[in-house]
Image (cartoon, rainbow, N blue to C red; front, top):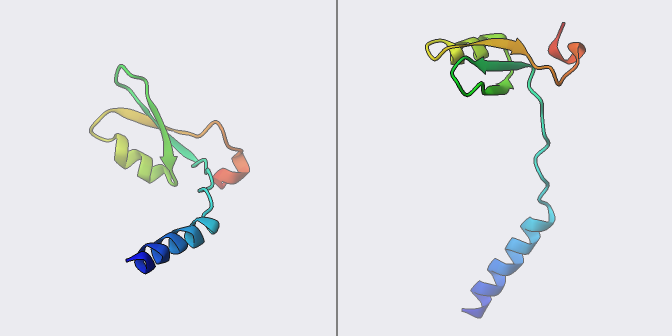
Length: 74
């Protein structure tokens, strides 16, 4: 039993050594919802992805104001 516990602890420690946090990424397109919340979701790679999200629920798509024009592919 001790061998199993020790193996699990050593395995967890070995995995923790190599763990890295995920890198933040700003996507180029944002959905601005037209409901009363005024929420904005900037999680879209393409304009078409954004449009598919706002269709039917109301809103429009805008270029992410936090990234440069060159990163948007213009």
